[in-house]
Every structure is written in structure tokens, then in C-alpha cells.
Amino acid sequence: MLTTIREKSQGAFAWGILLLIGVPFALWGINNYMDGGKEPPVASVGDKDFYQRDVNKAYEQYSQSLRGLGIDEQTLKTQALQKLIKDEVLLQYVQARGLTAPDDSVREYVKSLEYFQTDGHFDEGKYKSLLATQRMSSNEFVSRVKNAMIMEQFQRSIVDSSFASQYDVESFFKIQNQQRDVDYLTIPLQAVAEQPKDEEIASYYQQHQNAYQTPEQLSIDYIELSLADMAKKVLVTDEKLKAFYDEQKEQYTTPERRKISHILFAIDDKVSEKAAFEKAQKAKKELANKEFPVLAAELSDDKATAKQGGDLGLFSAGVMEKNFEDAATALTLGEVSEPVKSAFGYHLIKVTELIPSQIKPYDSVKNEVVKAYQKAQAENGFYEAGEKLTETSYQNPDSLQAAADALGLTIKKSSLFTKDHGDGIAADDKIRSAAFTEEVLQGNNSTPIELGTEVLVVLRMQEHKPAATKDLDAVKKDIIAILSNEKSRQLAVEKAKQIKARLQTGAAIQVVAVENKLELKNIKGLTRRKADLPEPLSQAIFKAAKPIGSKPSVFVTALPSGEQIVAILGKVTEGSMSDGDKRQLELAKKNIGNAFGQTEFNAVLNSLEADADISVQAKPPQLTE
Image 1: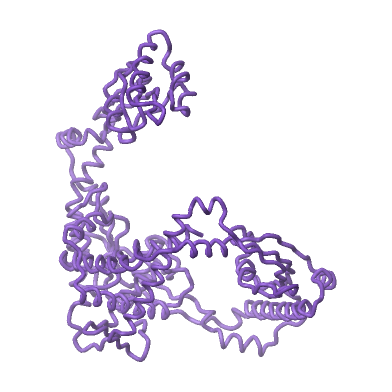
Image 2 (image 1 turned 60 degrees about the vertical axis):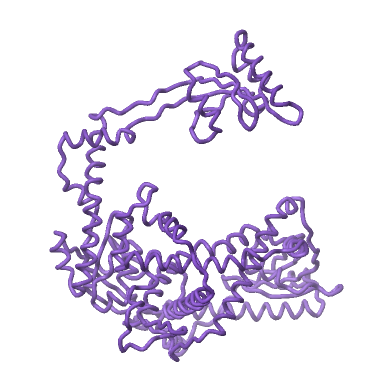
């Protein structure tokens, strides 16, 4: 539970800034900052107008992140508009109060984004290329980052200033560790004697035709710019390869490996630094007559390694303190160091195994060198080609041919696919999401789609098959099954109501179970942490009203299967903080305080929205076809 609170309170910061600046650049397009012409705005916040295309851009990102959750498109479209409005309200508020983010902080944040890195380092070529694919200038992108950072700054000023008192924490654990005793019966789906009538089947079909549609389908033409394909065309010579090999020798070098052991003489309240040093010096002399592992077992204060003769395993730079690492690195095989000081005390260090570094011969890695050289040589050209692909496909939105000719690419074709499934290139979610955007459905080229970091794809619609309703005969069996199941569920609900009524009049649940041939289950001391039950039942148990006096609390809840649970809550024992909870007291205060702060921030944002000058068109935003 504490982990959940922490994740929820911190997740808003981690994701919020990326959503605000539009990474991967799908939330707001550059057109949002251009004249809207005669197109009426969908919504306005003060002087800021949002047009249908802005909502469409936001919807594209929402649909990618929430695909498969069963949320309909129109709901997502509405949520996207609400998000745009809330963010603009907050942005205008913080700007009006003069909040700002230092340029150095903005630059460092941009450089830290993985989207712009190669091998863990900022890659300016990739940065410019990715911005170019979105038709966005560096100044515009940096401005968005700065806006996002000052919005986060304001959010943190509220969340980080919130706190939880000792009473809040105790109240939390009082509820969290509460125990409940429950008896319950499971009522299965009831058998249905009669089949649905033809009129019922026809009526259900008419009311639910949307559920019986063949899905919308598309096939696409596309061109694919691949770094791997470009690399294959780079000409190589032995001279160039050997020069590249010499430059990149570290990549073909096996680093030195050394295994070390140590004897630790700890410095603590009972042993001074001087005493520990003298003990180490004395032990060094004793090594003339004793083996290192024997002496380590006798003297080392590192009890965990003493049993293994002081063995620390393979030495890795960056793990130990500098003094320790310098000494371990300087030793030859079998040599024992002089006493070496660390934060723990003094050490005697011995190298027990040493494998020198080795450079793989050129001939043994030539194939690797060829691939690495070709890729390195092709990278700059790949980014330049990406810019050209973006520019040409944008300037010729009604055809891929111009871009294909400019880059020497072949136009490829896919088979038909749906929003949820495809083969070949359409097996990729990004391709399917892009194919079903308004831009492509209207007959335009898509914006370049990144598949990993080394492939760019531009696509356009080849064939479009709208969703179509299936004939009644084709779905009749399915409808009969649904209607029969609904009837079974309704009978189970009615049975549960009857049993609940009997229990509320004082009938013993044991007697009711026998009368109805149902299995009675008992749970004692159930807690929220150990609720090994179906989620709906667990939630219902802890939402149920406490029993009053000797009168138990009776309630009914449904399982996803349609089965009904009739339960009696007989006893509630208030919880208290366990020893484990007390050890996490500070963490609990912090996380509960963050949760309070996030709630407070949401309230502030709602208040700002209520006071802002916002206008929204009467009709909800539509999914333009």
C-alpha cells in the first residue's frame, strides 16, 4: 500500500513533464502556434485557442497509450481536450506569476532525454533529426520544455509542502490493518429452461448492432528508411577498416580481470584508527608464516568473507573507495598490500588471480569491424536522409513517389489490417496507430514514424474498408448465448436477494446454506493486505458497514462471472501499527503526505480552471473522418 501511494504521488511528475512537452512529439503540433485561418476554435483559454487539429494530435497520443483498455474514441477525444485545457490554465497561471526555469537546467534536461542520446551521450545530430521529423524548431522545443518545468515547479511547491501528522499515519494503519470476520455463500448462475424467442433475438440485434461489426480495415503503401540498409551500401577497404579498428580498440579489448581477497581490521567505538593500523601491520608480518586465507579466517572483521578466506571475488572498478581500488589495481599476482585505509578500517589486500587485458586480433573481429564501420559511416547520412524524407513527404502529401525517388527507396505494400492486429510491418503498434489517424484517412502521407532508433517509415492509405454490420443469421447463436447468460445472471441476482432477505430476518447462514445446497465459507481475521479473494468480494467486504451490536451486516456483491455472493460481516477488529509498520514510519509519513499534496494540487488546479476564462464549443470534439 505504501509503495502504491509513493508510485501514484511521484508518477505525476515523472510522466507529466513528458506529456507536457509532447515527447514523442505527438501531443501538440506546430500548427497550434500558427494562424487558425477561418477555422473556428474547439475551445479557448483566455487568448489561447485550440483547434480541431490540436485535439486530434492529443487524441493520437492518448489512443496509443490507452489502446486495449476498452475506452471508446469519443471519450478519449473529450479527455484529450480536457487535458489541453487544464495544462493551458496551469501554464497561464505560472507565467503570470513570473515563474521561470534556468536555461542551464533546461539544457541539461534536454540532454538527459534518451530520445536524443547515442550510447548514453547526447547526440546533436539525432536531436536535430528528431525535431525535424516533427517540423519543430529547437527554440520551440526548448520553450515547451521550459514551460513544462515551471509547471512542474509549481506542482512540486504544493505537493512537497504537504505533510502527514502522526495521527494521519496512525489512522492510515488503523484502517489498513483492520481485521474482518466474514461468512459467505456463492450462488452460481441458474439454469435457464427456455430458449430466447425470435422477437427477443431480433430486438437485441437491433439494439446492439455496433457489437456485430467487422472491424475497420486498412492496407497501406509505405517507404522505409533504414540505417542498416544504408550501412550495407558503404564501401570498405582494408586500409579504412584497420584505421577504424585502431581508433576503436577499446571496443575489441577484454579488460583485465583480477580476483582479490582482503583482511579487514575495523575502526569502531572500541578500536581506534591507530590500533587498527597496528593490528594490520602485525598481521602483515604474520603472513610470513601463515597462509592468507587462514589468517583472514582468524583475524578479519569482515565476517561474511572471513569464512571464505577473505575472498571478495572479481574486482570491479567503481565499487570500492578510491584508496582501496588504487591499491588493488597496483598489486601484482600474489602480492599483499601494505595496510590500506577505507571508511571501514584498514585492509590487507591480496590479488589471488590475474587475467591480463587482451586485444582481439583484427582478423578475428574483421566482420564485426566491417559492420561497426559501415554503421558509423552511415549515421550522418541517415539523419540527413531522415530530414529529407520528412521534408519531401510533407511537401508532397498526396504521394510517396517524390520521397521514394529522392532517396532511392522502394514503395512497399501491406495486406489489410485492423486497429488491433496486423501482419508484417502492421504488426507494429506504431504503424497501426499512425495508419488510422485522421491525417492518413483523409489521404495524406503520415508524419515519419520511428521504429526503434534506426528505422523511419512514412505511410499512406492504399485501401480502406469501413466497419460493416454482420447479418443476423451470422450472429444468431452468439445472441442466444448472451441472452441465456443474462437470464441466468438475473435468476442468480433474484436468488441472492431472497437469501439476503432471509438472513436479515435472523435466519442462521448455516441453515440457509443447507436449504439451498450451497457451500458455506468462513474467513477469520481478513486484512486488506492478505485478502486472497476475488477483488470484487474483497472490496465489498471492506466497504460493508460494521455490524451494530449483535446484529451482523449482510450484503450482496457480484463476481465478473455473474455469480452472486451473499455475505455476513460478523466482526470488525480495529488495526494498529505493527513493528514492521513502525520501521517504515518516516516512509509512511512521506508517502501519505505526498498523496495529500497531490490531492491538494488537484483541488488548486480545479479552482484555477473554475476561475479561468474558458469557452468550449457546445458539441463535443468529433473524430474527423
